[in-house]
Length: 260
Image (cartoon, rainbow, N blue to C red; front, side, top):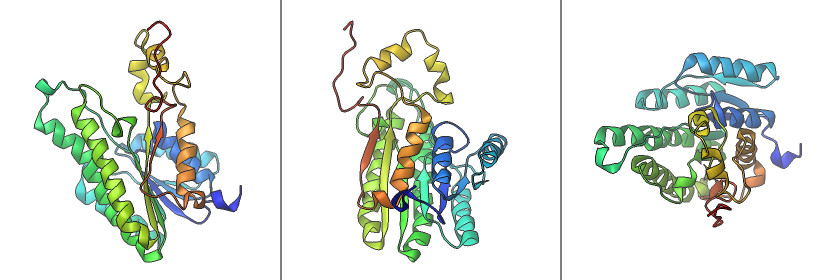
């Protein structure tokens, strides 16, 4: 590994790291040399995931907390930063969705989605930035969605939350950039993760989506992990306020299915 991609000696926090994209992000960042604190709400699954990566010789640790709990968010970052004496990388990956037609939507669902997808990351960014600014160096990476740059029916709260997270990313980049801390977003499209098992089982769904992606397939979770490791490294030192869409070309190229 060249020095520009190394994360050796750095401390990272990655939320939603017990499975799916977050798990592969934790693996990639740890493989690059960082000490990684993997966080999630469910302790049992988180502990199992940490054990898996430790068996691979990686320096990973579990810290379970609920992203919807303000006090827990604040306490987690303060504890990790204080105990390590530094916090170099924050990856805000955890988030939730809610499928509801507008006519059936409730403000309770809106508040829940916004609380987890925007308010929680905001608090983590705020607390992490204090450690990073003190050192004059840091990487904040918010994980959005391809829906952070476009829209979709029946997921109004989710789309709004991801657009909000994109705006927050740019605002933090403007404020923290002069202090040595970059803030960017990785916006994934369709990936073959556990959370998508149900929709992948629908007849024709996988083919229908793949037919609209210029690469002709869904992404593999490890492909997201490598991008996060790059964004956290010195190789991405001049990237700030950027929304990096990782969707195989879904939102950038107009592709019609063959039978359209």
